[in-house]
Image 1 (cartoon, protein in one colour):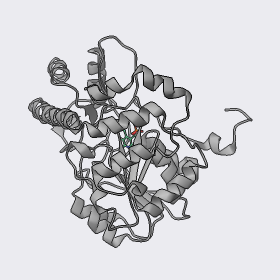
Image 2 (cartoon, protein in one colour):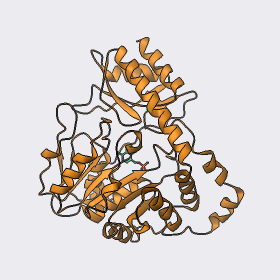
Image 3 (cartoon, rainbow, N blue to C red):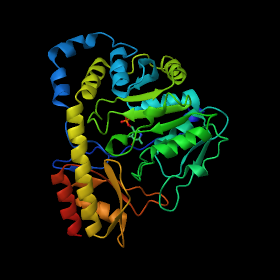
Image 4 (tube, rainbow, N blue to C red):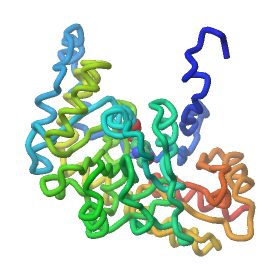
Length: 350
Ligand SMILES: *Cc1c(COP(=O)(O)O)cnc(C)c1O
């Protein structure tokens, strides 16, 4: 704290990302990254030639990439926005749509960046409690609001919502923007991108960080009505005109084009998840139903913080949140079969 800080900075409570420790042989299951490398085609792309071109500014509008995404999702390029990680896309959209003088609604247990952005942008928040079974019930969301945002599947619970329920919410909630944060949608939920032509207040956000193995590249995207994308462009061009660097744009195009590789990795992770859940259940864990690349699991009768520490002593890192309602759970990213076997073995030795 210093007298030079702006008043708003004094009041911030910044987001705390999962650790990225440098420990040899660490099995890292704490930040929902993919255990698999990016597509070999992404690796091929980062040639001498691509590096040479870094002296030039990138395309400020990432036009080629938007075309690729538009083709992939059968929308128009003018309905696509891209940013430097979906966290940046979220920051821009909070500014673009949620400074309304009415509260933004989101689940009480959800992505912890949402309240951080509310503070940063002076947005009033109203959290809606998850039901006792940790599910979202849209019936609890009043229509008098300044916007609604939720992840599908939710994080850290991993529980997804059926598309029909999201559509029912959109039919009811027509006067504010509804954002579906689909960071984990590829692992078992259904994307709401198919609804954007029907609902002009729907914005769908995705990331390349989880299912496409590019967390280190920082690429996120949003798809919605052209008028929503225009607002995002206005904010973006008032903040940083070149959010995506040349390599990120080119790599993301290839990542979408190599759909076979994407599906292979995704299917492997889903299969490993199902195996992990059944092994955890054999060990007495209660595991919430997961449609994501992680599980939210409760070591019944044991102290979750101690279990996390025991795993850490065995060089296995999982995420523990010391927060009301969820401090008895561990959030465990799905790694490779070998990594999950090592984790299960470590849990057997408690
Ligand atoms: C990981 C995650 C993000 C952020 O992804 P980046 O594109 O890496 O910034 C956004 N929302 C949720 C719910 C996430 O879990």
